[in-house]
Amino acid sequence: MQKTTAAKAAALSFSRRVYRVSELAKLGISQSTAYRWARADGPWTRLAPGIVLVAPGPATLRDRIEAALLRAGPHAMLTGLHAARLHGLKSPPESADIHVLIPHRQKIQSYAGTRFERTIRLPKPIFVDGIPVSPPVRAVMDGARTFMSAALTQQVLFEAIKAENLCRFEELVAEMETGSRRGTAVPRATLRAYKTGLEPPRDLLRVALTPASGPPPPRAVRPRRRSLWSAGRLLRRTVLRTLVPSP
Image (cartoon, rainbow, N blue to C red; front, side, top):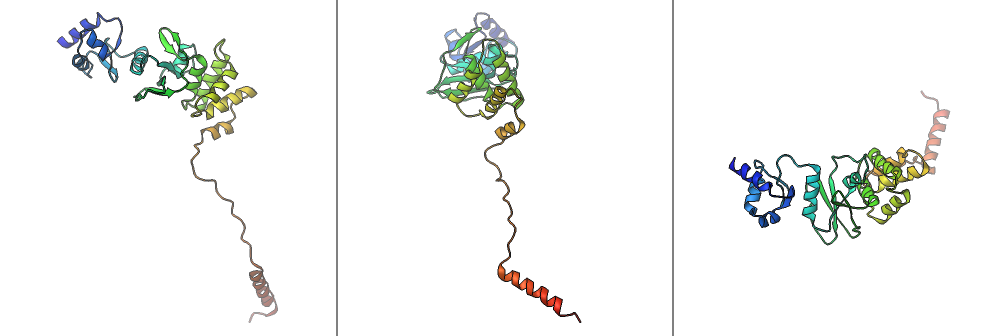
């Protein structure tokens, strides 16, 4: 009870909900106290290594995003499906993992629900509601490369293209060709289908979703050819059976 009361009283003086433990030490909360209050039975919540939620109650999506960005450092930015949602798209699911871009020189371990991606193509972020996010084209394509179902990939890409002043078809194709090729099979098939004005061809999506490794295709069985010698023996046997009557 005393621990909860002290934690709530301390949180009232904070200007944010999510902090690094190292920041709290400068505000009068020792690291040992912060970690103790962030245990499973404590009033605070540990959101990431070295990051805690100092407000009561479960963490919101915004809390988790801020924790990931604090963990990643000043040059990081949100990308992928949650960034696309901040840009105004409705089709990306809220349950998607948080996807954060970091400079290639950094190495940060991903954790449950949050993925850090190193990149040499770190774009200039756009701030949406105080959150640094990648530009719309990068955000949408990063989300499309996360091995979603073909149906959800189509929804996200088609909505992005049809949205006013968000993404042009040519920009998405250029981003797909410039960026990482990992996970682009289904987006490539979907954009090709959009260009032709058709639904994604099932055979094309099936090929895109089939892993490269797998059992080899069955080999055609060639008919067995008889040699001339064996064919001659067969002919002689047939003639003898015809000429010699059976007893």
